[in-house]
Image 1 (spheres, rainbow, N blue to C red):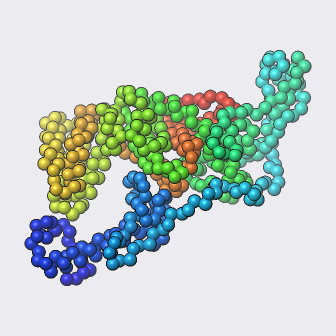
Image 2: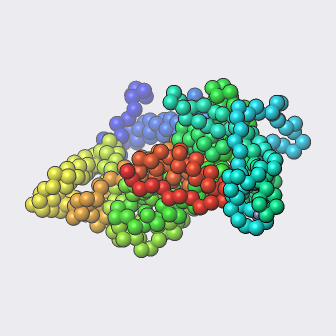
Image 3: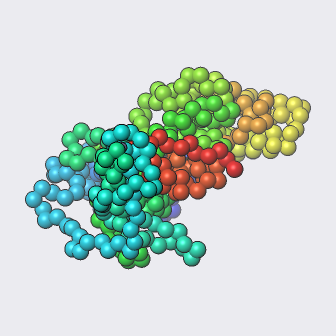
Length: 508
Ligand SMILES: [Zn+2]
């Protein structure tokens, strides 16, 4: 026997094994053992013991044990070799011990600061509106006594040829009212985002070196274009000649998130009232917590939410009384909703996996199921009558019933899954305006999945809420053909001054 040729697994079953004599069985067992060892070693590969990149490693629970709740995000390391296994165990990386230090600058470390002050290219004067003394509105002709606060602000300007960053000195003027009282204009103050145990809380205020226009640009580079804070710093310094610290850039990204948060509640109301709602979820890491990032979206509105993996999370998000249809994958959290369309692309993929498998029954059932599902989608799309649609559904149901007690687990599981969720799978036949797939939600989640792979998630609740709110606003604006960054700049400006946000304009 040539041990290089892999054994043909598709030809093996219980009857074949029972027909073999002792020597043949030993030989076969050895070859199967070799295959199993090879597969186990391949499963245990990671960046420390193979040429795989570190980005392919699971972010948490590295090393030996299977990561707790790695929930579909590319299963984690599996140990090879148990007791009595002659092959050496594949070395696994030890989970890093937490140093106990907080991220960022350490106490006592030398700080960094600007060597020379920013040079303003022009000044902008700001006046108080009403008199603090008598409450009357101040007029153009009231006398300016002096300048109170003054500080440089970096503003992003759009020019016909592109963009530039201008340094403008904001001067807050003191005005003398006719009543004799002097009133000083002051930078506006917005909300305080409080996080327990943080030395310096995030306070939105107009007394800030980065104007809302530049903050929105920085947020765009981070959220939409996946640039890290350090890369943004390098970009601004190299291409725009603007020295900003990583801390200032981080602050801008957080401020945008905090300013976007109140908008999410409005968006959620709009989603709940829609006729068709897509919902999906993907794993997300918040510090060491394993969370889900949920998305619910309609044609013109999207809401992202980072929360627990509890089934109730979607109910908390959408509420009990949605009037529309929910389009989802097969995840159990959505099963309580009656008016639901199940994503058929997921089932087709499962069918294709069976069709490409080793079990002959599975190949047959998988190929057949894929053909019927695709046929059903086409028939509905072409508006065929019941004489075509009903037989397809009847054939599918009958085949699933035939396979629901099959000896192979995967076949059995798929057949039962289809039968258990039958109403949701064929809902689009009676309601042809329903989409047969959940691609809309999956596409919207892509940006977050890429961000997760690059950044390993968020660190705390503030970061999660801010990131989800920013994503919601950006995606909603894109769906409504509104420039998200102008809207975000305007919203941040209002939030820093302590004003309510304006709603996102309706689709043009
Ligand atoms: Zn007055």
